[in-house]
Length: 178
Image (tube, rainbow, N blue to C red; front, side, top):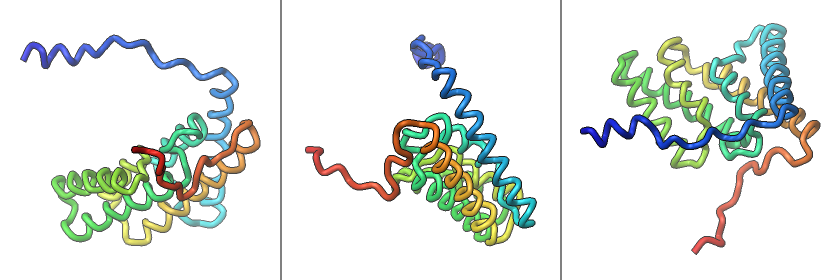
C-alpha cells in the first residue's frame, strides 16, 4: 500500500517547455476568432452551434495544431462519435448514472479503436445526458459547430504558421513498421 501511495507524488519530472510568446498569443487569438465566429453564426442563423467542448477543442486546434488529436478527422469524428454514443445510450437506457458511465466508456473506446481520439469530445456524452436533447443534437450543435471551428482553424493556422494544417484528413497506415 505504501508503494502504491508513493506513486501519487509523481516522478518529479520537469514541466513541459513553455510555448513561445508568439505562439501563445496566436493560440488565444485563433481560439477567440473561432468561438466568436461560431457564436456569431449561431446568433445570426438562430441555430444552436456551440458546445462547451468546442472551447476545449480550440485549445488543441490553435495551441497544438500539429498534434494528432488536433487534426480535422479527429475533431469531427471524435465529436460526432461521442455525441452519437451519448444519444444512443440516453435513448436506449434513460438518463441513469450507470448509462452515462457506459456511454462515456464506449465513446472513449470507439475513439481509440477508430483512431479519432479528440479529448474534448469525451465530454459530449456528459453534455448529452445533462441536456437530454433530441437526435438533432448530432447535427447542431455537434457536427456543424465542430465543422465551424475546424474551418476557422484551417484558415487561421495556414495564415499564421509556416507549416501546413492539417497534417492529414483521412490519413494512411504506416506500412514501414515491421
